[in-house]
View 1 (cartoon, rainbow, N blue to C red):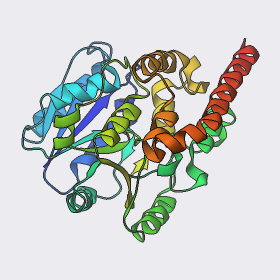
View 2: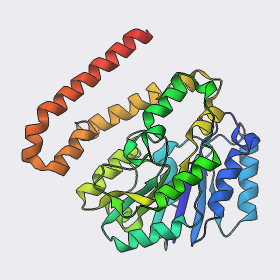
View 3: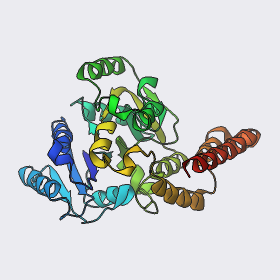
Length: 322
């Protein structure tokens, strides 16, 4: 059984009016397989009246399928998922973090995921192919990589369509379906449709709630999984569409954040938390795990150079923006 946990954030109460969240959740509900849908409303209930009313109505319509968690504040990514986890059925072998901008284009994906993860007992975390993810190894092509997404946000968002066409989606699904196997090892997965084995979560713990709103929580969980002997993988023959641009425009369109990627305050808090916990950038933590202590020591000058170059780039960008 799957417990699919969906934290929903809509600070300006726009998703229901646009029909976007209805589309995402209805497609999730149309999947075949044994699952429950746990929705965490990460909004103040009064300020998001349309969303609150819709989610309550949906939960009433599907009382045996949907659970609604209403903390009446923004718990963020980690605490939002963990709040859903606390009410998940004990018999769920697989726990899914699904973002609201995940577009389920394959109703059989749960069955495919279960077959693949059951056949590979060491898989702890898995994610399908997707588009516009920050981790480019999960993007189907360079046409839909993180750089392309950032370009849409920063350079000419008005000239780009919010959604990938249905014809293009069909082409991507066909291309992906012709592939086999998994891609591993990887340091982490995105959070569009990330699947976690329950026995792994029971052993190593869920998301660290030190991350207040978001960023780095998936990397932290991925590194802990690797250190505990689990695989973190990409599922090569499964695809989930990431409607990232559409949802970003709906959620923050018309605000100062709409042209900013990423949000510096959220990234800053998460960076401080990561540095305090791990002491090194995640690439170095992953590199030491993957290549071993000896080879990592030989590669250390490269990592140090990369770290200093990143700091210089950040300082330069801050100077220009100031």
